[in-house]
Image (cartoon, rainbow, N blue to C red):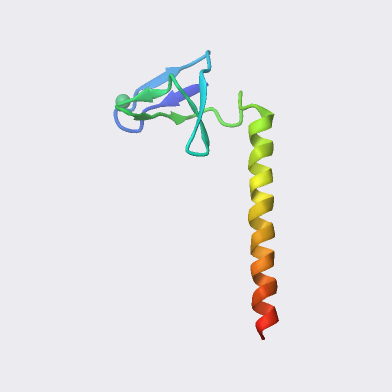
Length: 77
Ligand SMILES: [Zn+2]
């Protein structure tokens, strides 16, 4: 995966992933530069499917909550 620092524009290629789950996001432990997370230039590659499933699950909960809110609002009319 290719990573680019948003600050100093350094580009690096990381072939070993030390993924950490932080702030509801997966981050590569080695992809840090200028004390911040580097931007991933290679998208949808090397990301475990299980993480993507988790996002879908979360989306479903958000959709469900939105629907409930909608129901409540329409019921007040
Ligand atoms: Zn940097």
